[in-house]
Image (cartoon, rainbow, N blue to C red):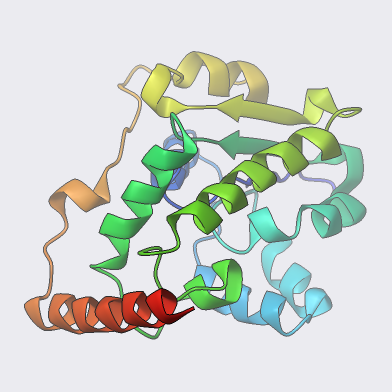
Length: 208
């Protein structure tokens, strides 16, 4: 385990795709098998999960934000962590709502992670989840500040912050500000099914 591992520990829709593309542009061996990794995390099969990720160097999206204590136990002071944020919890929730319309209505981890199938009607709970996560990461790394980079691509962070933290040269290219939501086509059938399921959730929440 001599190689350094770098984990993106921001929640989804906080610029994790930009972080992935930045890792790839810097030449890191990036792990990009999130669904399988999340299933192993969910089952508590950490030995199998670590066996899969040990050959790689960089990681982002699920399940890493959910298992930072286990990552610290495994890699200790040799690992680095990057907390990506949005401008606010409210901006993040709106992005999550938009994204949920495009995703598979069942084959996604939202219920396992947030306790709701969709953010709609549960905006306050999601905002609280976001704020708790950021606060908990700050607490975990209070005595390990050298291991944590806290960034927000929306407010101007980019190559200088990332490369300074990783101690690598800044590439001669623009930072990869990825926004899949703006360009991804929406499957009409998937959109329709998500809208029906959202309506059911809103009706259910209204009865509580």
